Length: 119
Picture 1 (cartoon, rainbow, N blue to C red):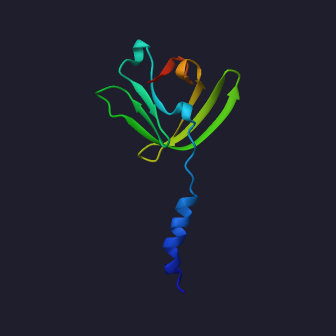
Picture 2 (tube, one colour):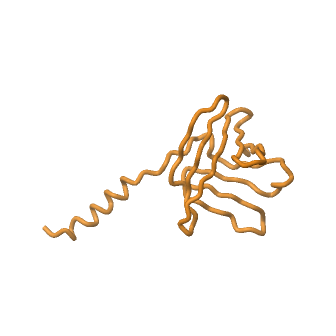
């Protein structure tokens, strides 16, 4: 038999073996902050994408999640989410998450703004 007959099957097998990272249920949802500097902005996380909405005038940033690392640190868990934007650029976002009060997170940046899950 020719290799060309097996090529589609090999391609399908390869695609099935590329596993999507598992996003913890606690992180999935829409996140907003009451900080006035971020009014009209929010963060959405689902099982495949991170979407950063920076206001009505700006196109949302959509990034596909390619890897997640986690480590437990006292009362919260730190997640490092590696993603790819539409141009193929890799980005990382570090989140400190706690399930208290329905879910709270802080993005690792100097400001340390508290974000809460929108119900």
